[in-house]
Image 1 (cartoon, rainbow, N blue to C red):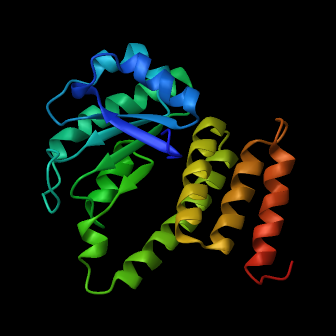
Image 2: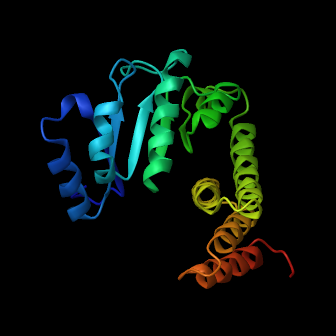
Length: 212
């Protein structure tokens, strides 16, 4: 973090003072993330959940890549997602391990909004196609956020719009970024900052070459 990392995640099992460490990371200017191994209960983390910007649920045992996804970790993720919603927390819910086109659906349905995919991208026959799918995911996230907003589910809409922004930025897709900014601005209508997101949406669409 002192070298400029934007986000730092540490394992809860390896930290003797996780709250102090999370606060120190934030003081330095980094996002504070905490990772939880498959066999570690999630409930003890609830009482200090507000100290973290991101919670990573490991869907394999940490150590090496190429392992198979562990579906038995999904109830833990779902419980965490419920607690995040109950608190109105903005924490990202990340999964890492065995993430493929099929398992990502299970994780998303359980509440994950941030995904780490290694082998499924870098081990793909056509990495460019894998990247294209990430871009499509960004568009779908923005669309889903808009649907949630239309249903009056503002908090969930903002979470999905935030995910869409991250995915579009990672994919460097200005058209998707415009859609994501618009979804966030729409979800925030009446709140401070909404107009800024709508302005960013217009700028991103223009950079993409679209004529509005």
